[in-house]
Length: 269
Image (cartoon, rainbow, N blue to C red; front, side, top):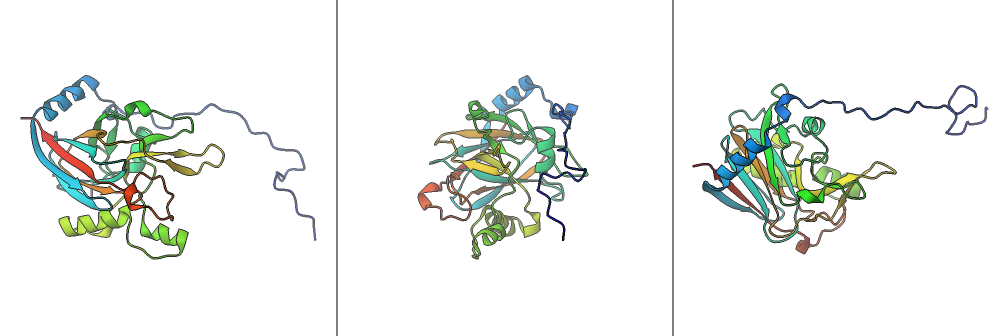
């Protein structure tokens, strides 16, 4: 039997391997469709929010709801009572096979969306579904740990992963809430629910192990985001049962950590 080699052994003698150093290369240059006129969208936002308020709904804590928008409508989502994160899905209202593609949105913009970024649809369509136009938390930026808000990294909490972590069965996640909402309100099915835009959620990757982390959301009562629909949309929002995400998945979340979110839809007159 031969002696086991240490983990640092490179397989070519005992000389450590040297790796060339390179500067990071941005893989995806933003296409023209990903870069908007800020002046034009500020004007669109002004005309919408000073226009007609079409709909107001409150998504209860630990639940999800759906609503529709026409191209050009503006949606405002407000932290209604206390700190709370939300998970969002988007579909083309006329063709639900075209839905939000978080991975491509991440590649074309960033891991965390900021004002004037866009939300993109899945292949083979690959076009803007909505444009992010306002954020009361925009100044948070990127913190000392690399944390930032409104990510397109996390896939949504779900009961399948909860069982992997805890060994326990439950129904009580963003996935199950979104499924319930689209089944009961729109006659859809579980497979229609997809990876999400995590709004108000502070996340990043640890520098040492590159693991996905979260921090308690800095969002407070009265904070809000706004986006403008680029096509006729069906939208779903879950008030995450993790609340402000100050408790890791698998641990019990106190009810007072969870709050509703308010949705308002505006249209230019």
